Amino acid sequence: MKTQALKGMRDLLPAEQTLRDYIQGKILETYRASGFERISTPMLEDMENLDKSEGGDNLNLIFKVLKRGDKLTAALNTGDPKQLSDMGLRYDLTLPLSRYYAANKDKLPNPFKVIQTDRVFRAERPQKGRLREFVQCDIDILGDSSPNAEVELIDVTARALLNIGFTGFTVNINDRRILRGMLESMGFAADTLDSVCITFDKMDKIGAEGVKAELTEKQLPETAINALADFIAAGDVTLESVASRCAAPAIADDLKYVLATANTLAAGRYQVAYCPSLVRGQGYYTGMVFEVTCPQFSGAVAGGGPRPWTHRRSGRCTAGHPGCPAHTGHGRPRGERSTSRRPHCAGRSWW
Image (cartoon, rainbow, N blue to C red; front, side, top):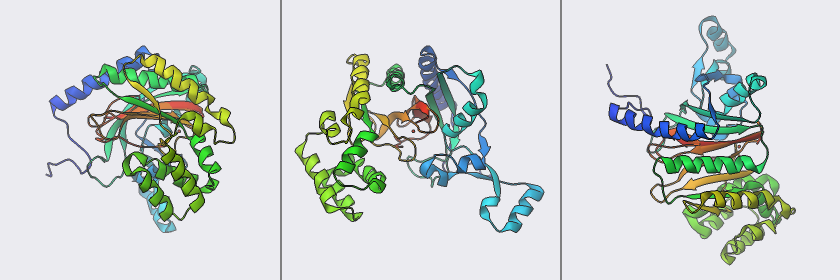
């Protein structure tokens, strides 16, 4: 018998499980005290749903389950690999929640404030910081399109982090619509904005010169690249200066409200900051996004934002190594940069 767990998966000793149970218990206690209710969904989902979901790059990381018996034989005879599987393991908790909400919304309150804490699976190449099995702990608000949903998720996520011992962290907030508006005004074509945003999101890692070099490698317009480089060099990256470059500056009003309110709720216990280069996952989030960074960890320890197809907003906590809340995940020892609006908002952590 092979005694080692599969690559990308882990056994937990009693002491490790006890620690996880404690952390998860503190997080759930915080979420429930804020009116969120916990649900559970199956690990397996229909392949048709998984393939049509807004999972971005995660769609390439699905563990697929082969059909059985005569159905498998018939699928083999077609010669089409896509016909071989009819279900797959969930790669996150978003698609299952969307299906769950569609099936049960008549029985649920509106807005619906929900917690999910479950295992998810991704066919990653196992390496440091990337596991094939880990636990996400998500909070979502479905049915509320107001900026108050973002405020609540940021506040609850931050309180969960405080309750498990995090200090000195910063909640970074941006609205991708403002960023995209500014970039388009500089001369970047609309169909290149996702690519430009991905590069701009690396600002904290590769610096202004690195951003300029990468955009040049992508053969984007030189005038647009220079306009962005000049803007960065000027150092005037306030929300007002960025919004003034958009065709509709009023788009920043909601973000100003969220920043001001979140800062008031922080009451000096942590920092709240506008971060114009924050993007998160391109396939998920479309409007306002937030990400929590902490000096003790590399990458983000939490994050979230609105998603387009569920009126839902979500928050996620990644707490680096053991992981943590509001989209929280256990067993994924890295901060995840991701990029999600039905009025829905979510928060997430990884353990």
